Amino acid sequence: MNKILLFAQLKEQAGSNTLALDVSGKTVKELRDYLESETDLGSLTGIMIAINEEFATDETIINAEDVIALIPPVSGG
Amino acid sequence: MNCEITRDTIKIDEIYAKVVRREAGAVTTFIGTVRELTYGRKTLYLEYEAYEEMALKKLEQIVVEMKERWPGVEAAISHRIGRLEISDIAVAIAVSSPHRPEAYEANRYAIERIKEIVPIWKKEHWEDGEKWIGNQRGTKEYVDGIPEEVDLIE
Image (cartoon, rainbow over all chains, first blue to last red; front, side, top):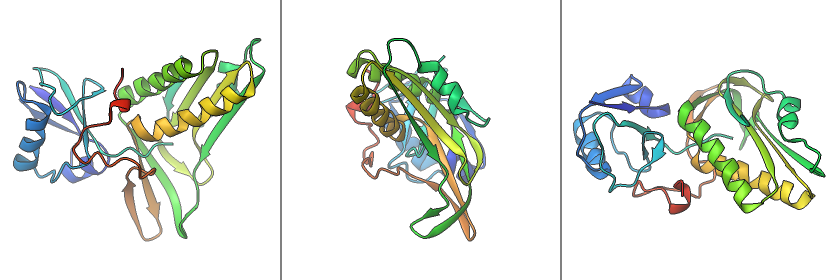
């Protein structure tokens, strides 16, 4: 099972700060498509994806137990 | 530990103390504060949220990058999260170096990098509404969802 962390507007949209989905074996690109079609998160354009606290590219393959985070454009500082 | 994500008031002298040393002839500090007016719109207060574990790692990555670009600098960064009132300190960066050019340049680099790669988000609360603010630099769209190479850890 993979934990998917949500922050900022995505967290509010989903009404929760995590999703639990088994997406191991999928690429990050496949995960994006899956989330866009199977959840109410809407378009993930502009959202970066981190795996185990590092930014991942669309080709990265997700492993079992990887912690995934959806990272909206940041606005710290 | 020179970087932190904190819910407490940021104390500049503590950040300064982390970088001051005998080899340094210059210390620059940058202090980012909560602004009341943005393009005429009045902010009541801000709320910062972070992916704390990753944000801390990214702050530490920025310090590593600074030391690679400007050998001889020492740096400390603190970012506050939670509810912040007008004029509260949101972020403080202290950089020391033997000579002043590096201390200025590396400090500027740190705040710009924070705005690119550190997973911290700001929600503006106005008199007439609220909104999570996106990328403020307007330089990154991530249209295909892929961070630029420079944003990855290498």
